[in-house]
Image 1 (cartoon, rainbow, N blue to C red):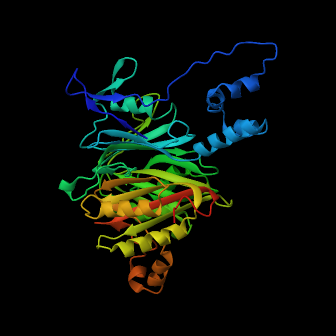
Image 2 (image 1 turned 45 degrees about the horizontal axis):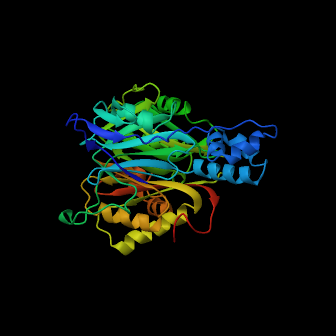
Image 3 (image 1 turned 135 degrees about the vertical axis):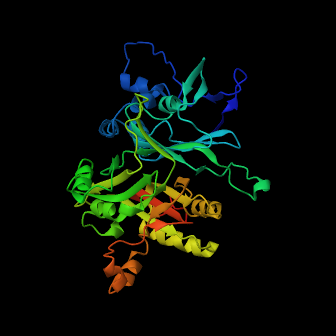
Length: 426
């Protein structure tokens, strides 16, 4: 879905104009009668029943599926929409506003907004065009149009943001077919069954006990972290291994998908206040974790891979994607992140090939100034290389290399029922 936006307003050349992207309200008049039945009336006036179902929680929707076939089919469709990732994106050169089909129907748990600091200032005024013109900051716009009330979300400032939907974008011949950049894009993570998503700060320079105390506020003793996205605003390498050992808490590192890097700014918000919850200091990590009960079988998979700075052929890169695909089972829903060195040259090729192999999984691509991540698809290789290696024993190294330059880190998450084909496309 694409909507033209951000046209320069004639009333002020310094204020951008943005159309409303909220779902439009409607009115329906139902005439009373002796044979009036609420259930029949709801399903007879489209889209009244759908509007009612949109306000129901998952358990109530499942109860509605027992009423009749019409209610069952509609409730099932809404439940499916709510388990998918939704996203919105503004592409600067084409001046279009893109979104996923499930944008207005998602059961949102957390929201991440990546934006290009060259274009966006969070406190800069824009003009929202609805029935009347409204002047507001970009943060207020996101809170009004994109993020529902009381949903925790964060703004991450990056060197560059790659659009999710590349199908309708025109590449410039003057820039060697370079993919247009996104000014900002937001990904809304749904309520994944039996998976908890947490956002928090942690200072890795503290003692192990202090780090574990911070982690215990968000991760229960019977939970295991399956994926960690970690972002920093300064060089984080000094204490990264100590921090990761605390996160793993004795678990095998192969079970943790890891990705992140050094970015320009981190600002977490609650959408109903427009106030920053707290600033991230230069010493702190900002973490987004996906965790589950360590003793339960959950329909959730996570994997990460590192594409080193050395140039790879198309065949070699696609071979890596095949291994990542094998690591993360083919399920009904998913999302992927690509954290790439800002100076890397072949990043657009990687994005195009990833979309070819995973056409139904949204890929959020950002540029950073230093990448963090490791390869879960070839973890046995790390074990084979380090077993009996005296150099690793001297430095007491227990984790694989996680600090990279001139590289790309891919993190893939999948959840829901297993499917034979469809999501991965191959």
